[in-house]
Length: 340
Image (cartoon, rainbow, N blue to C red; front, side, top):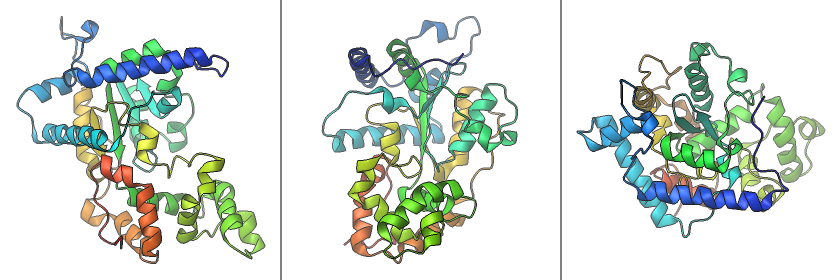
């Protein structure tokens, strides 16, 4: 039987108390020495393997490898960016944890960001649970609801314990390349009928005067400029949250409320995945289909081509919309933008 959510609407007082406990856990986690693990049950006694968080703590305290130093610097950059750009902390709510998946056996928390290899990371988590070669797991199975529990479905006490003792990680991507990938994959491809029907028809109906009846019915020919106008339209988020494929990474994973121990990047996915799997104690587990080298990244060229016809005014507005992702994860504004 699946675990029921501990936050039904009628228990608002309990949910508020749980949120306060979560915030206390986050504060304690931020103030304690980096990656200190207090769980005696996970200590290295009698040959018991160290947890991933303990492994990372050992690397941080000793002579760091080049990859360990890279990830140490990313954590520090994220911490400083949160301090600089977050005006005040708010309570961590259960819905903030909906994208954080839990692997109790390996003591891992993974916040998934769509269009940042999240299908393959879900395959890896399923493989760690004994479901075979990650490359052989179909995409629809990796995304099947209920196979990987969400941190939001646990009690406040359980959430506190997992945030304290488990290694938390996420993977991010240059925001506009991720946005271009979402548009091309979800609105511009012939196989994307579900997204075209739900979002494409909405975009055409709202933003294209005198649209052809076929476009109104199918939403199959949304232009990139129309997609961006839809994102910038205040009505879009007034009616419902952004779809997760173009929602900002910081709004999905809340990195200034939840402390992430490993911040991986799509641009260095193969190296970061190997580093993380080594911490887990599964260096032989191969991450499926590493991306092309950055200099051969087709999405970068596609993003450049898509944005070249967008006016500087709209480029600036869109950059402002995604600015926190650029700042928190140390991405520079793309050179092809005309932001002045």
